View 1 (cartoon, rainbow, N blue to C red):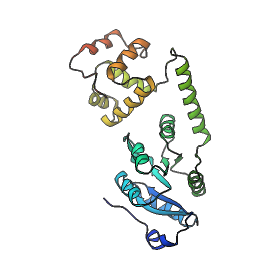
View 2 (cartoon, one colour):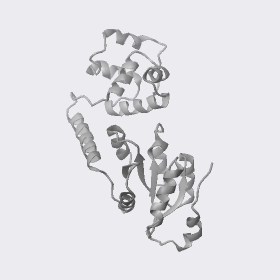
View 3 (spheres, helix red, strand yellow):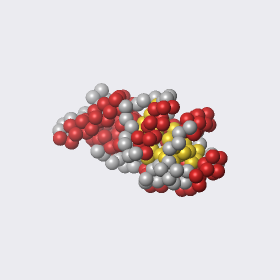
View 4 (spheres, helix red, strand yellow):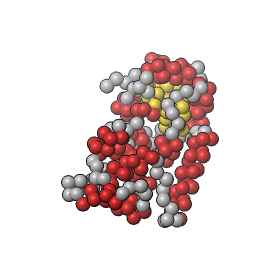
Length: 253
């Protein structure tokens, strides 16, 4: 495991302003780390105290350096459900900015719900990145207009669902496809193969589906879908696999 510590951080740490914003750059791409470090190097009130190329490196850096803000590549936490909770446990006072390659409604809303203070594109301009770090270090949340609309829509949908039990939660096409596979008694490995992804991604989707529908396992999910007619295009034949004792519907995922 390699943890990069900028030379200027080691040489100038004693001269660092007590009010300087301490930043860790966590990115698998060295070119992004170098670029961001150069951007922050010309700012008197921001200091990069460490750089990390993996989550393990980031956790080690958080244990070693007092940190105000972490700028994190979204890909580093892709498929890792407990990454943000672990970050919060290890550095409860640090604020997290996640850089994403593409804006996605479900992922963006989920990141803000989990406590991320800012979701920004990888293509963000240097001046906006600096402004973002300063705002978040000051305790604010950085969110663009599109993300605001997504978050508001998500909370409105949640409120409607709570006040009207007959209202069904909004599920994406991929979530519906996974639910359809579950109702046919397919295991995670089989679902991943059919959809063209990994078992871990299927597990992540299932956790989100469980949260949306308020169920705790595969059996409850199957029964919920039958009762609420979630899969309107599914045939009665889809119900048969529920009785198959070889399918572990009561497994957590």
